[in-house]
Image 1 (cartoon, rainbow, N blue to C red):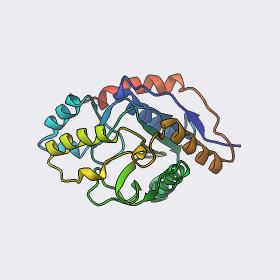
Image 2: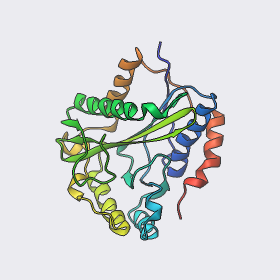
Image 3: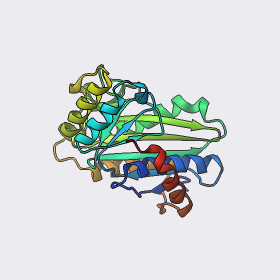
Amino acid sequence: MPCVRLVRQGFPADPALDVAVGHALLERAARGEVGPTLRVYRPGPTVAFGRLDRLRPGFGAAVSAARGHGFEPVLRQPGGRAAAYDSAALCLDVVRPEAAAVPALQVRFAAAADLLAGALRAVGVDARVGEVPGEYCPGAWTVNARGRVKLAGTAQRVVRGASLLGAVVLVGGGARVRAVLEAVYAALELDWDPSTAGAADDDVPGLSVHAVERAVLDAYAAIEGGPLPEEALDDATAARARELAQGHRLG
């Protein structure tokens, strides 16, 4: 029987709360209060900044640029540089209690990238794993289209006793994401190639977030031996997320 529970709740009107839910799940998993959880949700327009971004002299201007494009700036839990997404994206939080989370860091990255690339191939995208030269928020485990356009990125946060792997799959809205990233990265004075930003529906016109979500859940079901049991977000996690949300708000 599957041992990973599926949670679908999202808070698109409050991106900081959406980020805080993953933070709360990580805390509670580390204390043994929740088991392995896959959270899948549709976000609101968000620019998720990494902690290194806060050290850039243009950080305040970057936050303002995000808002100017209609995206809410938040400070995310896992690492990496600024990433942008909206309701045309699919977000995932994979939280696991783990006695020794650090040694499996690269294994988790590789497994997540392979799963997401396989799910995108299942819906017709020429999806591959590997960093795209000049991409925003660069990483070795980027999922790309044709080796040219970044479609999905992953990041991790590890604490004693648990891990959180966050992923964002850009299904649509490539032009909007590209525009806000151009403004944000200019303010941060970080070099990148805007042609590396896009979305899966650039390659497969008409592709829906629902179709990608179904492919991702089918991939997890294949690993777990059956469909994941779906549960509502528990009250204790929701309450802790509301407490943590203020720490993820910017400006």
